[in-house]
Length: 79
Image (tube, helix red, strand yellow):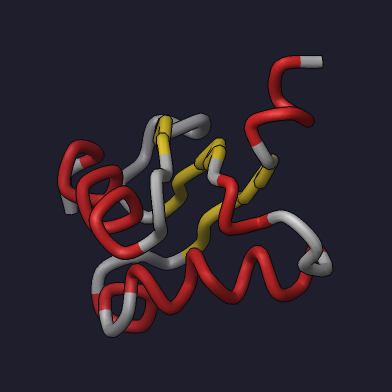
């Protein structure tokens, strides 16, 4: 799965999200993503990550082996 497609899925399924996805190990199965969205406000870290997994849907079981997530509200990210 292409990085830009992963970013598009996250950004189109989470309100006002900005996603930056990389392949830190250089292989196709492992991804890392930094996702910034006001939708994360007042949510636990587990719930924030669940929003990202839900945005990726079936791709999490079919195309993506693992994804390392860092999630922030815009205020947290700007600090």
